[in-house]
Image (cartoon, rainbow, N blue to C red; front, top):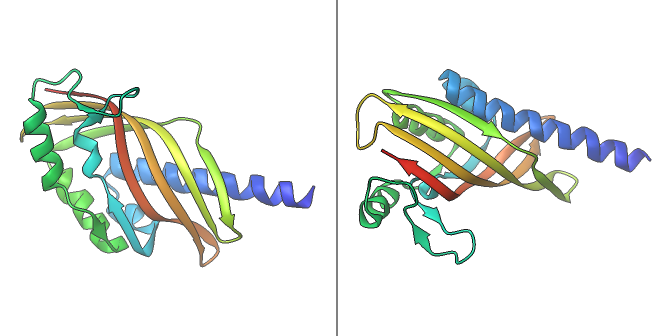
Length: 169
């Protein structure tokens, strides 16, 4: 019973970490955003601008006014970022002139050690832009993350985004 209580407490702590991630982006709280990451974390959102067909795994541009080539070009321009402060700076730069709303759904969380975990988060986000290559984006997909327990709390160690549906205008 004690092991199950530990597991449930830590699952909830990881959920709170991810909720802070989403809230911080949407509220433009970049110091709060940095705080959810391990100091040496890697953030790779290059998969956010293009979707994979859920059955075939092939790249596609469902619901997009952009060509597949244009979406691939957007994706190539997004590079992984390392380090909590650099991640926050990249997030801030990416969201200039944009408003967003992130939704998370029931995650799959697995502990790989007492101080390490991995999670898959089904998610959806809406981004409205006043300037740039698009004015609206709605993405549905998954965050694939690893976590590390540091200084008494869970932090994101790696974060990757994949999409199964994407609307860009």
